[in-house]
Picture (cartoon, rainbow, N blue to C red):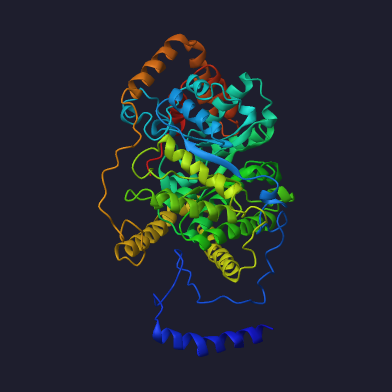
Length: 547
């Protein structure tokens, strides 16, 4: 059969293709994906086309982690939001919930991400700019005022200070009378990619990994429905990696977290079913779909074969996805609606469990409410009108998609072998391996744009004269002053003796690596110690990482 197909293809190329190309040459000498995988002119059946696909909900989960996928329920529709102070962000969250979003996704400002209170000199110019400012439990109480945490799923994009924000969230849930076993959501808590691609780290890697492992252990006992980490390829891709690197580096980090947790004494099956992932959805439609399928299959094999996980749930890679912010253009911003739609569709066809769609104006500013609504409607139209959710993994068996899936998996394995030979992710970070590989890929991609080998519609081709966009979102310049005033009032009214005792106990516990720090952080939070004070207590013991 294979010989017959091969012969027919060769005959087609000689009798049809060669003569046709003489009349109308192909557009390029070489076609390839963004990951430099060469794209053949035509894909035909091969002997192993269906060998490693399996069925949805069965190992190796190429076709999806659940048996019925979107025929049972749609992915969680999230819109990443947070700006200014807790009062303003609370209004946006309520608007999103009213519009049909099924999960909240919180953006925190830069001071919150790197452990500084709003009144710190280094923070003043950044308060509320790229996310909501959270200085204490008081802000978190305002942020979720009127929102029942047991009825929603919340994702928090926070890493170095993830333990503190989680403690605040749990405290509010308890005060609402919620059943902690039913509280659902995710903290990003992926500190390794901060050293690789993003930079919002505080402590040295070893101390940061301790906090991450502490959260794994605490959640497995106290918050069983919560995902204690979202291992993120999104920011690796935003930094300039290609799709293969995104898969390989993200999974390498996942392996490092699992290894660290196991070395600390945790049984692999006690926490691995709650590990989650976070991927980017870029422009190359079929490569992105194949990327998700390859990542699922690769992770399943690693968890079963390398780490010896026994439970089927431990083998599943479940992921949140977000359309690619780096692909949005400031020129002809309505073109971004089309880009986001294509990317969102790729995420759905790739089997995402949760999705955020970017807004058309994010290359200019934080999105307006109107733009956020369009982004959310994009997801809803795909879910309810397109028909792509009626059957599971509809592109399975596509000669092209299956070939890409296989090639991405194999190329990612090559990277993983190199990283393992270096001693794992932390050693590779210390050697700048990830950073250098991403920089090289980013340079190649940018060169293609500048040479117009890669067209970005409206930016390097089909440009038009445009009026300056006037309708953009802006932050009240008084936000910083109001936030500092609120924090000062809190510090004057709280029990400062109790706060001091809590912070001293945390510092003492931080010196003993055998102690889980989450209960101490909870004590600090419940008594209104500020995020900056808690971070400083740990800084005093562990120091800061300078990179």
